[in-house]
Image 1 (cartoon, rainbow, N blue to C red):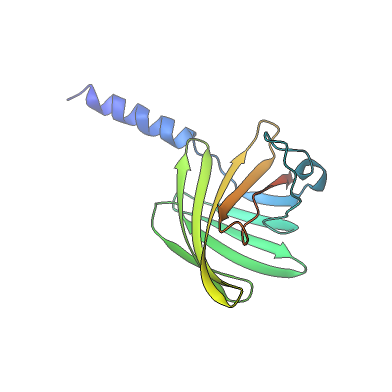
Image 2: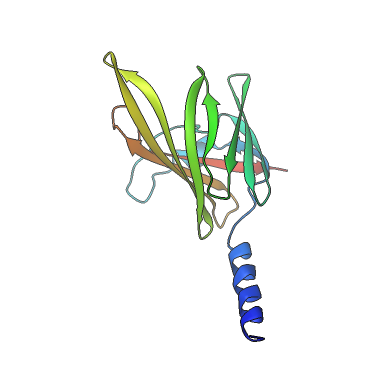
Length: 158
């Protein structure tokens, strides 16, 4: 029994170390976003606006996103529970976040109208900090007519 406790503490320490802290002020880096991804694609998209502030603790990630002079606040539960946020236009977005190593994966669902019909939009955003210290966000989803695969790069403002 005594050997199990140190192993559990070591395992918890490794899990805790694997999750980066996104807290800080970040600004959109147009030049780095224009660099092709691994598949050669370039889609200029400031997914989290021109600038955002992230506040993270063990249970949640709060994003204060500034875009075109307006601020949108989104809070994601990091315990695996569902969270609900409002996108511009009062669109309800339900999300679940989970860690995959050093990457945060946020899967979201919302509703939109396409050619007069209601459609369900599913998006996946993967967020991480690269070796240069930049925050990378990659988005994919369905339907393809509503979600353009894209990648955004943000740099931390000191």
